[in-house]
Image (tube, rainbow, N blue to C red):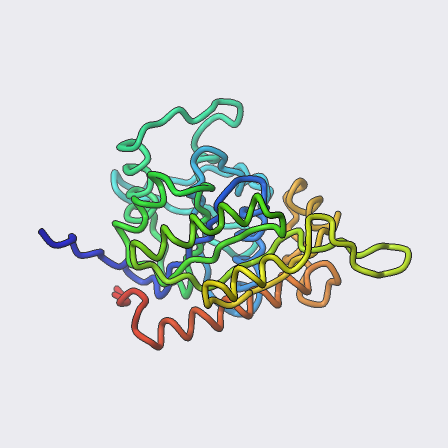
Length: 273
C-alpha cells in the first residue's frame, strides 16, 4: 500500500517545523522569535504551537485571548505581534497537565492544520514538542513539510539527541533545513569576550557532519530570556536591537533555505484558495 497523499493547507505556501532532540534547549524561544522576525521582514506568518505537553507560545507572546470558533470546523487564530497563532495553551487551563495518548494528539494536530483559518501565509512555523514522538509523526504524515529547523545547544548531551532527530526526519524524507545553536556563548558584559558556557563549535560540527547549514548561533542573553518570560520577544524590538541581531541573522538564513528548497520543488505544492 502506498502512503496517503499529503494535502497542502489552502493558502499556505511553506510549512516549517522547529524541532529539538531534547527539551530545555530554547526551541520555543527560537520558534517565536523566528516567526516574528520573518513577519517584520515582510512575510505573512502563522505560528502553530504543536508542543501540546508544554504549550508556552501564548506566554511568550503575552496573550491569553481565546481563539473563536465560527463554525464546527472553522477556528479563527489569535493575532499577536503580526502573527496568526493557535495553541493548546489558549484552550486548556495553564495549571492542568496534558495527559493524552497518540490518537488524541493526532486529532489536535489535524484540527490545528485543517480547521484553523490561516488565510494567505508565506510561512507557517510549527513549534514541535521535543523528541521524536506522536506529534512529529502526525504532522509529517498529514502535511507536506517544506523542512525542519533543528535547535540544539553546544553541549554533548544535547547533540546526541540532535542526531536522533535528524535521522528521524531523514528516514521519513523531510528536508532538514539546518541547525540553530542556541545558548551558543555568553558575551561578558565587562570585557565583551565570548564565554563558552556549554561548549564550543559543536553545532557547526554536527551541521557539517550531516551536510546541512548552521543557520545561526544565538547567544545567551538575559534580554532574550526576559523577553520570553514577559511576553515581549526581543525580535519585536527590530533588527537593530543588539540582542535581536543574531535572531534576525538566523531568520534570514532560514528564509534563504526555505526559498532554496521551494525552488527545488521538494516543498509542498501550494493550493491557493
